Length: 112
Length: 111
Image 1: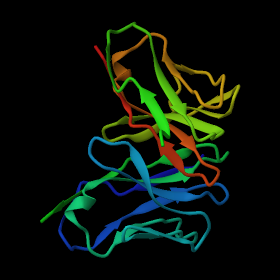
Image 2 (image 1 turned 30 degrees about the vertical axis):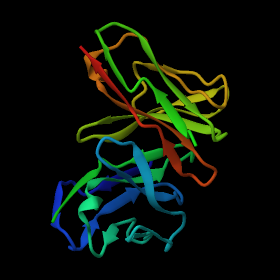
Image 3 (image 1 turned 45 degrees about the vertical axis):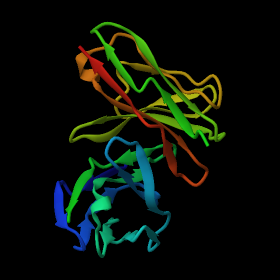
Image 4 (image 1 turned 180 degrees about the vertical axis):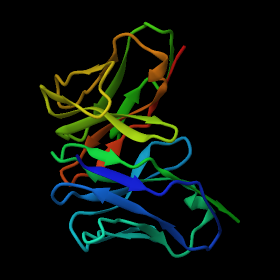
């Protein structure tokens, strides 16, 4: 079945540093790919998504490109802020397209 | 906008007790799902539903039952709670574009 692997954290950065969180996937067909973010004490919310190869999803300064040749969907941000401190989850749709399969999450801590 | 509403937010059970986590959505989404979140494990799919009257098992279904009598509601039942079911549970509904909308979560402790 479909699966996703993302880099383990925690990731600790200073404000304005560059962020990369790696995500690779295994899938049958061409699943949609997602990044979700979970702020402390809250549920998950969609950060960005891409539905086909070479699509770039972007939101709030974060970007990720759907790379079919490397089966990757790495999350990047050029300059992180303290308010970006959260847990980030990479996800892809399951084979039936009826639910999402999530990675284990990467905790990001940004200090000023 | 209510979105996805889960109740209760917190619950403590004793081993062997039963309970139901309620989930309701007002977005008329056909797909709904239940996940559990555990430290270091991410979110794991318990059960999902593609419409009223249709449910299926996810990655970790043992010990949980679901039903989907209406489009709006998707309750999760624990028939005989075990300490291994201590977790944070999230209900979600899926839009036509594939985006999941999550409830705020239900934190369950089984003693």
